[in-house]
Image (tube, rainbow over all chains, first blue to last red; front, side, top):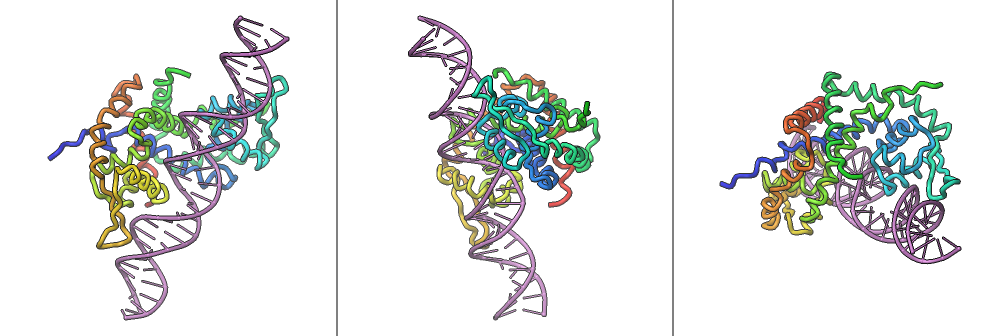
Length: 147
Length: 147
DNA sequence: CTAAATTAAATCGCACGCGATATAATCATG
DNA sequence: CATGATTATATCGCGTGCGATTTAATTTAG
């Protein structure tokens, strides 16, 4: 009659809830984004560029918390779809500016209803959702000791 | 002077906080799990088996919210490391039972300190973490309309 | 002014996730 | 009892994520 450590039980683990919730969100986005030919990470990068165009790969990475090993191929796919262009900086040839094309800019309006559509898929009170986000942001900043 | 829809701003999006927090958790687990040769999804599957051994692929999938297209190769990797064995059910040859090996069972004790180690990496009050988990679980169950 | 250090982005390798499909076994129905 | 439907797992394809390394450009020191 061995007793299992309570903390190793999956249903007691905050981390698993986070993991499951994140994947569920991506799945919920999928049909909405597929209509525009986008994945969720691609949509995140576009949201960043809609807010400020012409950012460097590294600046996008800082905002999205993604490195070039993820971003470079992702941005190439966005470029292939004519949503962005990649322009080497003249003052520093190592840097690469990412600019929205007209099609990329136009996509913002087309995507403007997505947040509401996502919201409509949950029946949680807005206050709870706000609190959830606040707790997540606290959690995120509570351990960024370095970088 | 175009105005950007507030809801499309990344920093207003619960979904992005979720996505970022989930990946951060996986990154925090990584050094702890690498010491045992595990990835985070592999660790999840092992936690499920530590709780109940001999489950079917599909039963593991229901608990981990993963399908066979993810689980089958993952389980093969665990089998390659001699942590589990895959046994076809005799009563239904379609089914595949997953049993922990002795090494797989022994790993539970070796991993028993991981939850505390993870906890030590945040300075959030336990009450906040509990509430975060509660909100995530509500969120998760608030949209499982089908399946 | 040049060699070493730093930096930005790209590349490589591997393990997920997951939609879609395939395969094979069991079940249901006429 | 045969055959079509269902079910469990496996396979395929593609796009992430990310540690590790590479490449090339710039900066820093001597």
